[in-house]
View 1 (cartoon, one colour):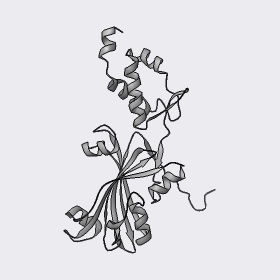
View 2 (tube, helix red, strand yellow; view 1 turned 90 degrees about the vertical axis):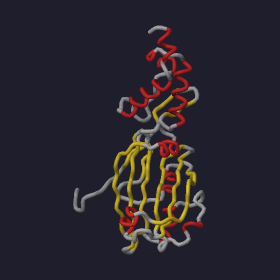
View 3 (cartoon, rainbow, N blue to C red; view 1 turned 60 degrees about the horizontal axis):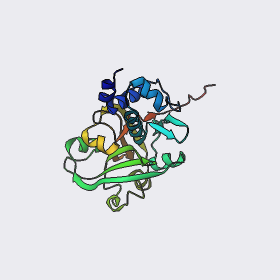
View 4 (cartoon, helix red, strand yellow; view 1 turned 180 degrees about the vertical axis):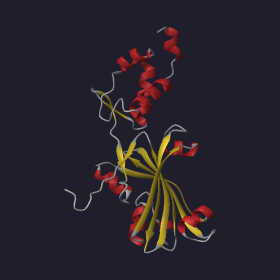
Length: 242
């Protein structure tokens, strides 16, 4: 490859190529990536180009760089078990990791028609809305956009969401009796991309969840997760099966 080609190849090209190889399963979690020198030879680019691509992939949580050992594909973080509704703080703590929260907005608003229908309320009824970003070891793993029925959690707006999650407040005020969940793939909007530190238009896993307590809808939430970093897990057993 010519020197001119080496100068013109961008770090974004190298980064996207590595991302694609990881997402396609060519490099699975825990696999050691080729060295920077080997990647330079493969892509025919400058070492600084490869270094920047790897640095950004590490910042996005896709790879782990170990001093003196090299770069490895990061382990996928499992998010909420599809058969359970859990507090994300507890999930992260069980992995031995640190959970932190960035509060975007917490406010009172009038329910739009779609929200009111989902929550079995009249259009224009007052609801609480929480928009938060949850981080695991400093890496954004979930953008939570939640509407809550004030009748079931009247002191929600008084909570410090850097210390407690909306889920924990709801578990205490409105014990869960029913839940509905839908999972779908969506593309990151410009706002979601900034909040989750991913490229605009990248794939996200969106979990739409409605929780019910004693016949009343307690909350509806849309939980967005970077698709390149996570997997959904679920298990069940059949009664009487051997």
